[in-house]
Image (cartoon, rainbow, N blue to C red):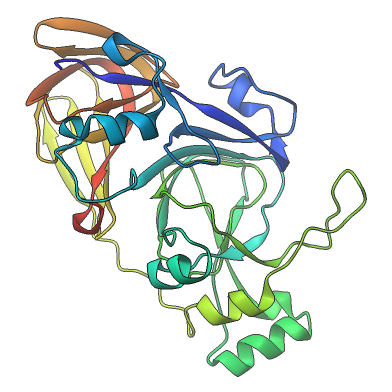
Length: 319
């Protein structure tokens, strides 16, 4: 198969969501509280499907199972990655995700290490990224006493920032921020704090305090990010992270650039601009909001135009 697999995303309503996924990317959203576009997903809570070619209409989980050759004949039983665009019109809950060991034991699915590329952020926007407790007892005590201002670390963000969020990291996306998230294919989330917020039925959402205490990294450790930047004429490739679960980079395209396969398959999202991708002398038009997979059968491809793309490949634990 010598063509990209363009994906049909799934849109998810959230209490904190808005309309930017329609306003900016043109997606058909189910309501004005739409928070997430599951852009490339084989997770059972939101399976996307192929939109073109011989496999049009086929769900990604079925494609992964029935045609492993497209993914380099992986050993992972489930498609290991999930790409989202998140519109946080309001603050998300403060939360934490388990690692694989805990997730598989107690939730029956992978843990959740993720990373964020900040697509857009209102002036003064901030995220919760880590905490100030030194011991598990102190962490539990500050939660019990509601000392959120003392416990939580807040970081100002702007468009173009990148954050690696390993499992165990206390975190929350703040209001006014839109991100592209690359993560393990998991939907296990433990809420630590939700501001006393109530749903449409007047009920507060469940918290998971004991699970959060069990899986949180204490004390918090900031990951060390060492970006790698490569330029070719007017184009720039920035590698944000190379990890055991995924590798993520940004392609800034302003002319023409040819890429050679360096992984079994590649997930790509066009976050800004427009252009073309040429594969085996066939040209495919790319628009902002497109998401596609470059399967294992493609050895090279050429991008042209003026656009920004986020690309991810599986890390060694995801093969």
